Length: 158
Image 1 (cartoon, rainbow, N blue to C red):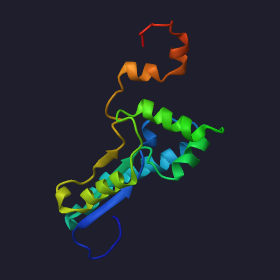
Image 2 (cartoon, rainbow, N blue to C red):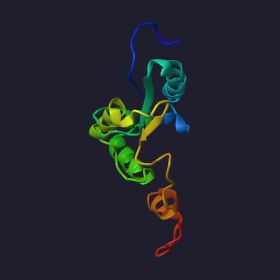
Image 3 (cartoon, helix red, strand yellow):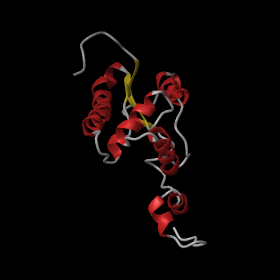
Image 4 (cartoon, rainbow, N blue to C red):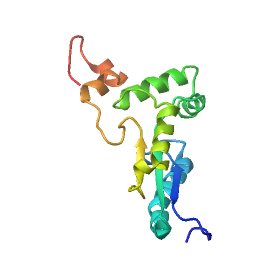
């Protein structure tokens, strides 16, 4: 059981990430920690339900913050790491952009408010649809340098 005390009612919001949804080089420990957080939410939600404490998770993808450039450098070292990472994110995220910190905060405000009074044990993705919606093949092909280099001039194949 989580903690001993007399709290009754409320909302616990765990901040995770969607990095464990797909394998990526170099971030295995981070992805495992994020997966662990996401696993705790339903367990804690069950353990705390009698005290009417809701437990949910926010799992964003890449967020437009100063830290994104550090992440870009870790995943793709080089002088153009930030630009290349942003272009890559735009090519794989269905909404074709980074999330803003405000958008993630809005998800937290929702979970902290009575608007989510019947939501517990949930993982709220703030990820532009990257883990819920497949990109169109033509969108991916246009941003894939291998496919682009193999295509004949005028060829519209993916």
